[in-house]
Image (cartoon, rainbow over all chains, first blue to last red; front, top):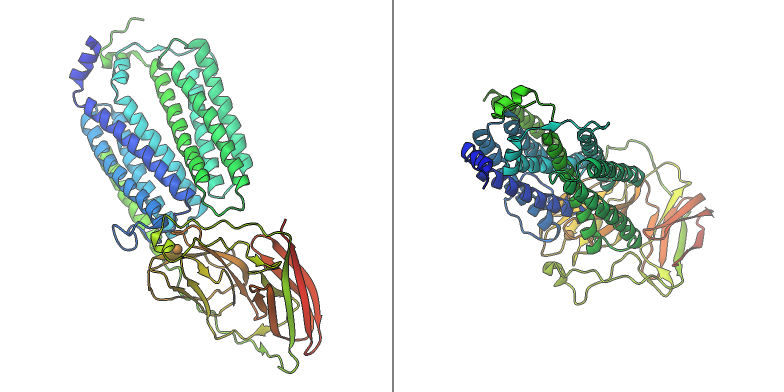
Length: 316
Length: 258
Ligand SMILES: [Cu+2]
């Protein structure tokens, strides 16, 4: 253990546990996204017509589609419970104001998300509500991942280093990364709109091209200027790999839909590939957001006061 | 501290607003009584009533229907000796069943609504019949003969969508569709293979082809009509038919299986 690490642990004894808990919450949230995607792919959203109870009970008989819909509700309740703990724990254990706010934002998001889930059942899956539910899920997952990231030891260690000068190329890597996040989120929105029959596939195809172009741009920039940075280049590479895989899954989903057009849905290959596509979309957004945070953390437009606050001597 | 308090305040406000908003959404599935019609009803003199009879043919080999996989649901699977085939295409000896046939245009005025309820049963986790037609405002009774829960979820476009659960041996669901709309898909989200089609027609001149592909539409006034046949897989066909008083005409629709 380096002396900086030891110092960080001494200064923030509670953050190790908080970090592990945030990682656990993010993992549970990923499972929740898979469960939610299964509900849509199995067309089980309305197998339980009431909400918040299921058939007037906390635990209905888990037959057919009810297994998916009520299973989703159970995992969601669990993640909601985790998020309450996470928000309170962050508020008590983390000194950084913005991180504490992020904890509350996660809690607000999960509450709104639960209500959207209930509303979409009660109003028979209106496209706007279902799409909002799908998109907020992706956003919430990214928030939990960011909480896990910024409570990590490596983040704390980076806190103690001097920020590198803002990269000179225009548009700069930090700007490229943020743009990629927005484009990715837009693409998730278009995908959700396609899935819930609000928009045609053409928009989602255009979005796919835009995301692919953005992540490649980020990779090219990272390779040219930051190939030695373990916090940037491998992440940019992984992001490109995931996007490639996602394009294949998307093409596969389209192909299998065409091939099985007359079959009685839902077919398992169709379910697996579409759920995988949704889950991978969540990972791509989260990975892109992690990269953005890493990059912004590396490069500072920080004023000297922010260094002084962290106790690092200003050497410029 | 101040931040957290204001956040929780906003959250409570949002929660309240949303729970109020969703309070109004749970009235689906009630019997919607059609407004009383004061308009005169057209009566057809039985001595002058015309008839359309006919058959629906399917040329070529019908696509083989896969067996419905109910293995995950013992309550459903146990009700069948062998897994039943899907009912998307039901044909034998070149004749196509489950084709909805109706007088699409050519009729004037209002016709009396049948006071016999139309019946849709859920039996063996399959809808019976697979294709059903009712008049606007005619009572539809949906029953559950299975030892398991179903949810009944019609997916209309011009009528109102609703979704209601029906437990084993639960009371019949009663409903009247207020608007004309053909081939409304009905599904159960618990058992994803379950599917039926309900057509809602403003008059009583419709039929569904039987196992031998035959149909009969009786009691028509004389006139020139467009008759349409609609099948869930093979689509729609139209035919012009002119009928005199008490005339009976035999027509034939023909679909291609390929
Ligand atoms: Cu069912």
